[in-house]
Image (tube, rainbow, N blue to C red; front, side):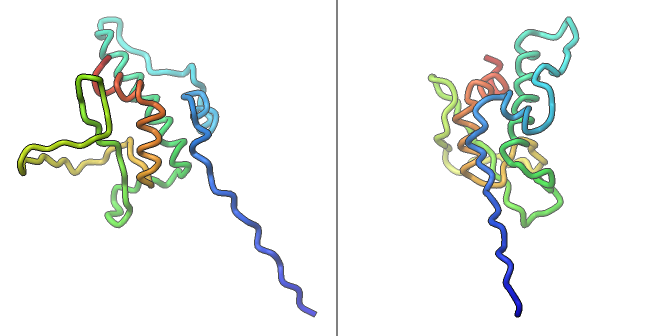
Amino acid sequence: MKTERATPKVKKFNYKKIKTFNDACKLQGVSPDDLPTMPVRCKSAHKKAIISGYKLMIITAAINNDEKFPDFSNTNQYKYFPWPNVSSSGLDFSGSSYDFAYAYAYVGFPLCFNEREKALYCFKQFNDLWKEWLLGI
């Protein structure tokens, strides 16, 4: 008599459990204290932006939970990234454009996500880091 084996259910990764940089570091197996070092003469705003960018890369990798993402040679793989709008209140996620003037840069962007929802979550949850990285504030 042949018995069927039950296939184990794969639990979907809950990226919303990543609330802090420390949470992301734990998932990525890196120390939160191991930050980039800057030359003494580097401006304070530049140091802040570089460290914020590094933190966002760790957070992005943790949220994606996939070491094979992104593959920039794969044009069929969707890659989502936050598209912030700078306003008087800081950064927000609403888009704006003027007429039909657009600029595109087709380069590998390390802060991209495999789902739109993940990009939105990261932008909202870590908005202060995005401000520091993009605006130097």
